[in-house]
Image 1 (cartoon, helix red, strand yellow):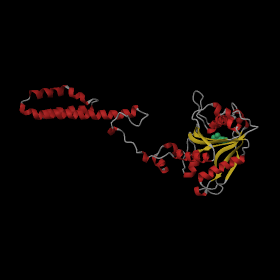
Image 2 (cartoon, protein in one colour):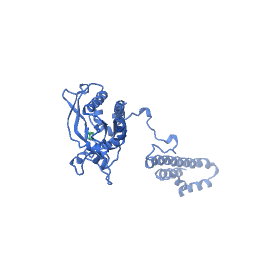
Image 3 (tube, helix red, strand yellow):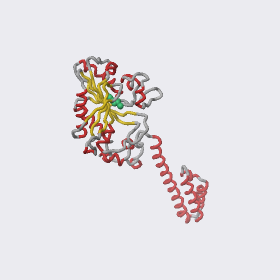
Image 4 (cartoon, protein in one colour):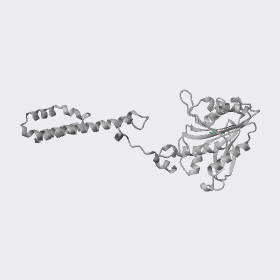
Length: 338
Ligand code: PHE
């Protein structure tokens, strides 16, 4: 009996290491034990039989465990689109965090505030594209072919020459074309577009390869810089919930003339000192060539446009010091925005 126990222990050890533990049920050593059982005198059969049955049960348990491990491993390896394999029984499904523990991403939440403010001012809002072409990125925006300003945007390109847009201004030509009829009806074009933009930059606390911009386009028969400054002031004062000092300084963008940089004085409530200016966005009167490119007569209509990063706005509002937090997916950062 003792040597039977030793044989069984050795078989179990091999089963534990085997790909398929059930193969050990067909092992010659186990078969011999079964033959011995047959030939045993009656009084020894119950004890011996119990050993064999326990062995079979242990092998079965090992086989079940292996199968469950394989099933959960294959969920990770095969199904990248669903959080678990729908064929798995409930007990074997991975534990997912309940939705109450989830939070909206701070950029999503703040973007909806931004869109809300502009739509209440009468702007329609459209999402920008994440893949575009040279025409919308440069040509329609009055960047002549070979113009050095094209290099200023550190633009990515696919091998086919498509462009993940480096700014939301790629939407201007589409917005203008779509709105031409409105102008002819005596109305204005008033649109914002928002979305991800991409630049081939070295990443640090203030530079990301992927970030969000919000762009505004307004065209009418009498649009002016004064109107633009009123819209921008109105937006920033609503977003930060207080009166602000604003200023502009000249800047160069081929698609506006004059081109400006728009700055606000950092509010004391957000840690600013008097005279500490923050550049928030680029803006200006839409260049006549950009209107012409969209088949709009610059003698009859004029417009203004602006575009700036969403992250900068949110970082100031919430005292976030590093731009990389937004894309890092760290729960302790994301949970601060419940
Ligand atoms: N697209 C410009 C940028 O990303 C900003 C801008 C938009 C400037 C519209 C003027 C008018 O740098």
